[in-house]
Image (cartoon, rainbow, N blue to C red; front, side, top):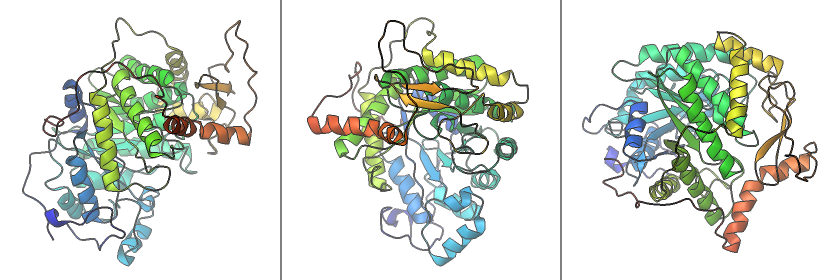
Length: 472
């Protein structure tokens, strides 16, 4: 079977794993960060799916469809759950039994098989990132480097606290070792790249100041352990204006704290919480994230699809989301920022967190552990044993995420401005939490059903990307 005759990636069940037949040699792959920088310089927003299949033929087909989308895209190898937690024996058993996996088992498939999967797809116009969710990423890092890749994502905090019970101290050590390993294994002139997942803690209901701070601190952690190309993340939340403040604060803090010779960019995630149930509502939310990315200055967007509320999306649905986001971005005029950036509410809060952690010592790994132990960093509604659990958040009447309880953190609970008569902030109940978690989905679904124009559109300009111009 040749690469050209691979089965469509949304078939019901994968076939037995065997190496796809590689295509003709292609130009050497570009480093991930350099590709995004070049796209940004050309005025193109890079869009990316989250996609993973256990079978190499299906995985290759997904990458090929992503590459051929009418958009400036990068590819994704999302890793399966067994590999994420280090249970490689279970991954091997699943492959032997023909049991479908929920991602690509990169540490179980041979490096040669993964290289064949990527041959003719991975090139200077299409870098590929490995996404995984592991607090123990060393085997994944070894496997991706052996396959000729140089980009991954995660972090000592963001791939520890939300996802399991691995002690934070252990995750910090694992990530320090893995960053140093990636820096050593990727040959020059390619530059290894790590994306912080810190701006996506629990996906929702975490006020942006803490998300921005954790993302920046993880980026600093990567740099101190040998990584010279990083991306800092932020997940779209409940209020467009607050989200724009957050992305701009992240860009500003990166300029203030990261060394000037470190390549960096900001990656935005389309809303990661409960998604609208109507196709129009889901599409409008995706379009809003693309406009936010352009106007606030993010260079890459991780998309979600109209199927998110119901099931794992198919490859065609992912491609449709990529093209929708790219077309929306092309029709959105850039931000008209002028003069020095203002000290927004989100920036001030994020800066307070960053300064408080850095004051705990030169060793950033130890400082992060101390910060969580003392409650200086405290993620709301996170049940990990190393999280203090004293912080709480709420969505105010205007849609902004606020702190109702801050514990030992270096920020204050929200107090309305003088002269404004607002209902007092009450403790979050279980019913209130469920209402808050579904608020964005309800808003976009209701706007869709009513035919409302929804949120105000920013100034637009330009035109939709062409197939030839999207990835020149």
